[in-house]
Length: 90
Image 1: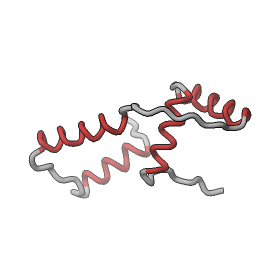
Image 2 (image 1 turned 120 degrees about the vertical axis):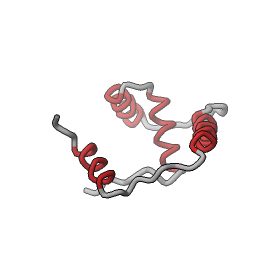
Image 3 (image 1 turned 135 degrees about the vertical axis):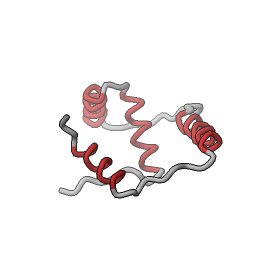
């Protein structure tokens, strides 16, 4: 069976013993499920103005990703505010 690069990285990590069992897994799983629900709850509306070209490009990217463009915008904003948006080096 051929593994992807990501799968090979994970397998190497497991074989090196870098993975550890989680204590109180049920409690922690519930806690993180609540965090996820709160993160993805969309209970506020924001209106912004952006250029038509940017909107068209966002819509194209969203189609490529298979999701609504508003969801893509929300995801990008969430990654930015949580520090997980990584700038691509030229």
